[in-house]
Length: 106
Image (tube, rainbow, N blue to C red; front, side, top):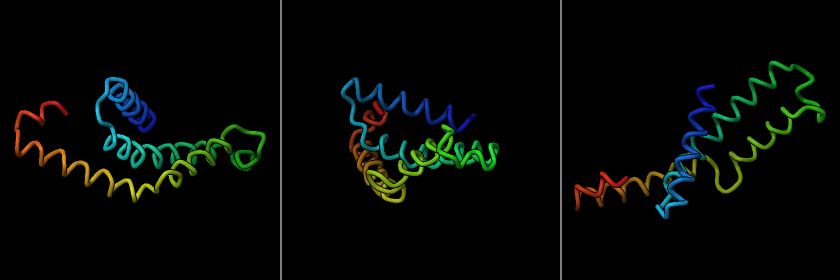
């Protein structure tokens, strides 16, 4: 429940920033880095609860599990997202060193 709530809140925050014209590359990379494995873990637990039935095409859980696993790979692996977010975070804080008031806008 916590992983779902955290991912949902982070997604809403990122979408709000995007709607308001705020740069979201770092947030998108971090969301993928945290959200994809967290949601895969949630689906894995649901699949475990359903036992063998969870692997059949008749259940929604099996499809969600495949989708979540695809999220970890598509558009760049979660390991690549760490590098993308890391570079972006360093750039943001470099701007903050040059202008300390900038950090309050993040």
